[in-house]
Amino acid sequence: TQLLEQSPQFLSIQEGENLTVYCNSSSVFSSLQWYRQEPGEGPVLLVTVVTGGEVKKLKRLTFQFGDARKDSSLHITAAQPGDTGLYLCAGAVGGTSYGKLTFGQGTILTVHP
Amino acid sequence: DTAVSQTPKYLVTQMGNDKSIKCEQNLGHDTMYWYKQDSKKFLKIMFSYNNKELIINETVPNRFSPKSPDKAHLNLHINSLELGDSAVYFCASSQSTSGYEQYFGPGTRLTVT
Image (cartoon, rainbow over all chains, first blue to last red; front, side):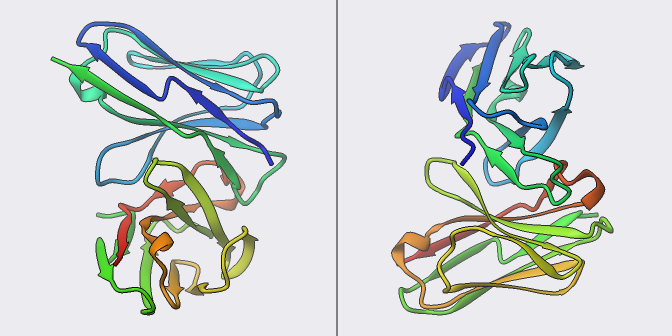
């Protein structure tokens, strides 16, 4: 069973601060995704990283896939209240045409104005 | 237009009852999933169907029976509901050629009393 550990579980910061969320595993993933979930809604895909060492940017969000494809990080610059939500990483194993994902336990981010 | 929709949004029922949750996607995807999210926000896959065929069947009690009448619909029927079944159930869909990019519905909050 592949396990993904996210840290921290909870993060409460002020508007304008930077933050990093980590997603670690002892398993190698063929790809890794980050989702954001708001209360009462389903997770929404933010990004998919596939290549070891890959870095992707989405406005103030920077995603990195570890060289060994076992870990990933999400960095948010100058956080805003609108960034508040549950952030989930999810890893896919093998060729996975059918998308069997293993999810981390999530990081609840609260950004205070 | 809603991409992945679920009904009902909320379901409150008593132990021992049988209930169903319906899911529909209008994205033209060929793969659909059911996930369970517990009170700690951990998201775990239950089932996956590709073109109406069961592909993934995780360790789920036999009381849970998915049915896919066509590739745009995936329903979940639960028999003899138990207190531990209380959770939020999410339907998701993807295209098998990029199975790791999944689109989630808004969730159904099931409460068993």
